[in-house]
Amino acid sequence: MYQDNGCGILDDVKEQIFQIGFGSDTGLGLFLIREILQITGLTITEKGVPGMGAQFIISVPKGRFRIGS
Image (cartoon, rainbow, N blue to C red; front, side, top):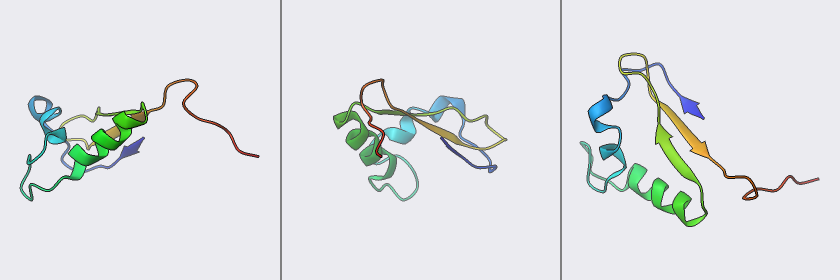
């Protein structure tokens, strides 16, 4: 999980932020991150509260990780 205490992300654009070209700089940003994570079976979502900050959660399914020595 990553979170900040900024202005947050409005509920009606939480999925749009992961689309290619969305935003003021229109780079690959979160679109590329989501694509790479999906290849490995992981997911990323934004669960923050508008006005209280953004909160990004990366979920790792059981069996998709290993613990090193």
